Amino acid sequence: MRKVLAATALAGSMVFAGLAAAPAAQAATQATGSPGSWGPYHSSGKKAYTYGKTYKSGKKVYTHWYGKEYTPQYGYVWFKYYSGGKWYKFYKKWDGSHHGVWSGKGIKKVYTWTCWGGKYSYCGSQHRIY
Image (cartoon, rainbow, N blue to C red; front, top):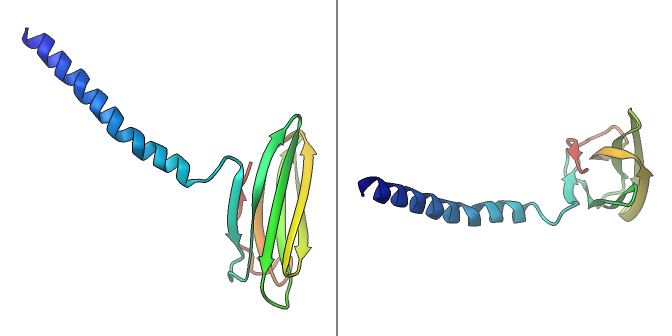
């Protein structure tokens, strides 16, 4: 009888612990935002930032990005992606506010970072977005 009570108490405590942990796990997943959305990612001087959404549709990976900067200089967003066993890298330059879209087939990974004042100047850290 004691073994049955001990097993029941242990099972009950595990269920209670699982229920108590579930809201915390749910809150942690919701804090990251909706699937595919990323940013804002700032330049090192915080004078420019980018944010956007990356998703796969069919065989293509699409990235919609938005850039903002508030100075007479330009903002630059860099994208580095892995496709077909090779890494590729390109940037887009903007002034003020800008929206852009790009896509590609067979993309496995995508990274982004933001620079301000020059394509290699005041760059923020890299972030994996896909």
